[in-house]
Image (tube, rainbow, N blue to C red; front, side, top):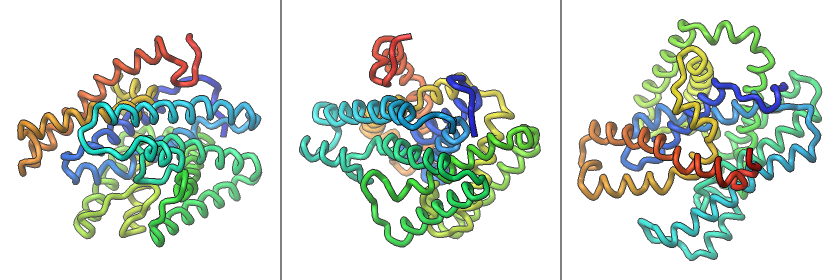
Length: 334
């Protein structure tokens, strides 16, 4: 379950980069729903798979905790606070009082000032995963317990719909998919020759696309993600199995784009910075009636263009932070 320290893995960066691109597309209000339904099952789960793959189980808890506070909680608090303050100055819609937004920020319940919810969710999930990995020595038992945690998350969310503070209801699903990443790492010597074959990638693509098409035919409004099985546990399983296997194969079989690797290396900042320019693009396009006028083809082309433009534009703030403000990421100058 270990990974070499401080060594970047290009295909892992590409995996996270595609996840960020899918996420940015999914956040565009006018983007056609059919493609959101297609990318939704994999757009966030790949980050937990990557976290499990790169997790190092030999580290002591204190330095591990300090590092996660420095590189996840600190950037989350800083960027979330900046987002809240910016909404008071550069806003395109009515906002809640400033004090209420900061209270909601610390409570962290989905739907209330949770634009950067993924940071604290990842932090808490990986802390739980650390202790599961540390305490449970039997690998079959480790994977079985993570599977039960997934079932618990899915059942709780499906049956109650309750959003708990700090996204507790999602932790079980997150740990399971980190365990999937760890399992791939553990058996990589056996799995990689299979996953790097084009025929395997083709099979996963066909399976994923078929499950998406069938699901849309039966449940046209359903949009799966890693912590919500929506209307069908069968289509949830198919989407996750084909989606994760397909993405792991995709980033290792096909040449990666430099922008996907860059976005993957800086996924935290892409997540934090994309909201305001994305919203600006949307307002401008709607103002000039270029989107949202009943032409889904135009909406799709503009949404894809916006996603690509955002991916390039966000290089600017990322480079500024990396070169001159690394403390915002909990890092020192190189």
